[in-house]
Image 1 (cartoon, helix red, strand yellow):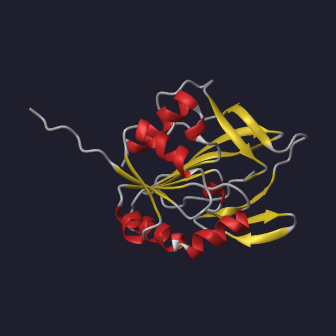
Image 2: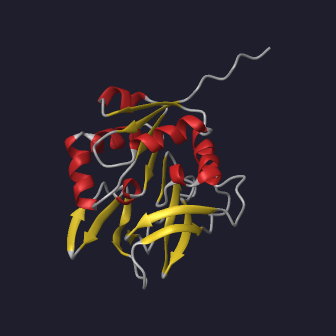
Length: 216
């Protein structure tokens, strides 16, 4: 008789910029043992680390650095430990963000710029479909017409990371469109991220979080 599988420990990193309570509830619904904290050791050693984010790119980066979140993300990824970013928590993983003509440095885990959406109506607020990457684990089991909840005025419109080593799996990039196509999600080794809010995306978002937890 097999023993029951132990719950995965997920830390929602609390650096002052994110809907931590809604993320906590959604992750618990998806089966994780969740804690909201900015404790360095707990964030470093959890099975999964979720980095939320709302507001301005530059402010989120300042808050993350003050909480040593940049070090935690870097150390976790250096050891192949899973990290997931949501909304601005995804955007700050890129090299830079450009808001009101001002450029701010991101974590530079991926090349590219977070720039204003190129659409008639901004912000992009509400439900939208995505074009999931072939072989995506994040969107496994989800209907191609599934909708996710977006609230953002900025996005990455150009994916520029090349994988030259055939032994390393190429990142899986999922797209959505609001005016112009933009990056909606990325699966890149231990680092995953979504521009939309899975914690506000109903059953589809719950399935997506369950898929992530299942890889931890």
